[in-house]
Length: 517
Image 1 (spheres, rainbow, N blue to C red):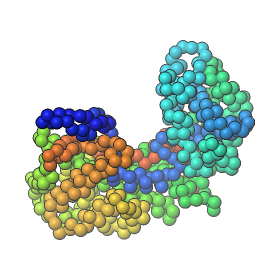
Image 2 (cartoon, rainbow, N blue to C red):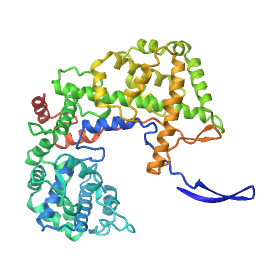
Image 3 (tube, rainbow, N blue to C red):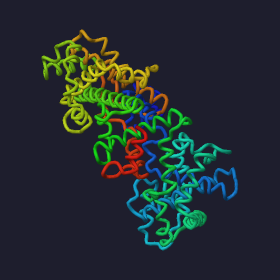
């Protein structure tokens, strides 16, 4: 927040902008390099986001829209919002009562409400938009508006209607609404909608509504089949986004089948970093290459962020901070002191000497993103990671071509493609000299530029250091973080629709994988 304060200076008043408060922002891409990876994983798993956490919400919201329309068409947005918010609050109460239901919006509020001991729970106030009461969620249109609508729209399940009211599409959306309706049956549907209208529910009704929870998709049901159809959309009518999602989900099934366990996002990323032992179709191998390109991009941004963390720690060694030439000199001197032989060779020699088959990719990644060890202790890990990535891309034309297509150069944007292009021009210079210049020109100054753009455009103060009298003074430390490519919800969706289990692939999953290979 900024205010104009009048201050006395030599007996005179001045009116200069002064920071009265600075709100710390974390994980905001301090080098502007995460955006490239985020854009790529959005293309790899369209229709799923990091905040769409359960598959059954897709069917629930399609049914909710259709049930609302069946009550009589209205274009009053407030009535629609009231309907959605009450339904979500009730859904959260049912899930809290059933227990074991993760990924449900408002579950913390619902759990507290159930502990009140009241025989009948009134959720009218909690579902309102009144800021003076405790609400199940503060978002205006609940988890539907905040998370699910845009992804369901991308999947062709929802569209915008009159007055901004979101409505289910008459084809795919209505098909899913009817499948959900068939699964829960008319008795539960009537009971649920009656509770929405009353904005209150008793304990017996909550228990009777348990079949509606996210984990209760019937294994043998049209609902499950339609979810699978939506996720793995194929055929001549499938658009590029549908095919990309289908291929990524098929790769998750491949990994689950190979490892004979429910894959984790981390294991999936590393499994696709190298060609799989099982032969893949041309489409799946092409998608695997895009995932490999994504992982390389994320590795590089973590390495660059580690150099940023190191430069900030150098600034913080004195209260006065450091001048830019001093930072560069410190980087070069300390790299040389830690490993004189490596620091003195040409960049191309270090790059070409990297054994990319034996390089400890995962261990270095864990070290750079972990909290153990100082930024300086990790400096050579970051440098060797960059050199190894440079070598990997240099000898892999398939990977290089995929990167150029998947991570296009656009204006001021930065990615592994732009950075390796810079390093390619430094081949004859010593490693210490190259990294010293990279840290100053493409890390320190880059952060200043990125933070200034966020200040100008978003009013967010994200500077990790400040300039004072020609010196850069540490303001906050930084811990490199990887991006999160929608894999956790994607894996959960596959479990929700009975394709993946704790033991890996289910029988349904194996059959589907065989059909998609």
